Length: 366
Image (cartoon, rainbow, N blue to C red; front, side):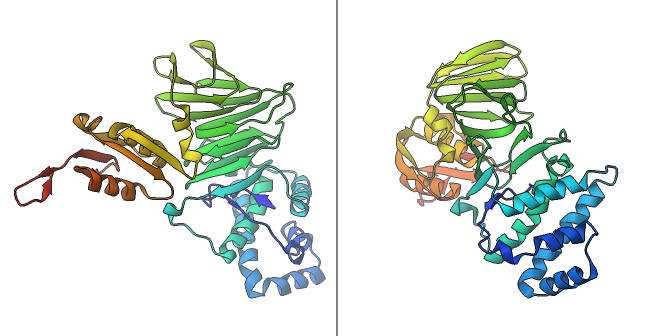
């Protein structure tokens, strides 16, 4: 069963419940619906008293209580939601989600903690079909009947109902309605995502962002459009896409990058390094004979951090190496050993790189 845990739990996880027949879902559902008999209630309590089951039941109770508190002004069709929940429990439904968690994040999940999150997510996932308040963390209150996915810590990958693969950068939110594929395949994006769109000539795939709409039929492209940001970027790797903004309608060709200035309503299209635009989704990235300035732009993209480099150093040094699971500081520390550069993080967590000067005692100073 593939389940997306809401931003409340700040993590996207996939886990196969190998023995889900051991979980008394029907009893749990009846308990929450307040339709459980005394006999079944006793059976459920007996199950929940087991150490490995107690935490699962506790988490489900907490989530259900929060659901009721959040929707005190709304009376949903509970019967419908529980039917959906029962169907979700019985089979693994799309979309599927998998983790692409970097080792550098240092985050691990024990078997027990994974199991607990999944149990709680079962309720949250289904209730999101009709109670979208729960998902409105990053994008405000959503229309009813909408699925919202938020990747808070590290990158993650999801598969949409049509088979489209989407990589989500950290702090990115993707949403689509339950009518996905009825007329077209529309999603809304805040943040950065890389798409590999399943081909369907009859139903175009449309990405809505702040001030821009991207329409495709089957292609590979990257969109970077955080809400509130001054610019939106679209990079095309394969196929063709059209961009619609207040500046008009334009078409991109493979290898081109479009930059839309939201404030001034200007759209610029140029040939660029589209491989760099999607490098953040790759486990490994080879840097070959790049200048310090180019390397810093790569690191900024991969680690989602602002980097400021002294203008005089932009083209002064060159580097060749392979990025894997190293932290940003590990990479920069190695670069500083190769060439005389100094670095530090300022109060705004901006990485600042400048020349390292040697004094007479041989100690470096900025």
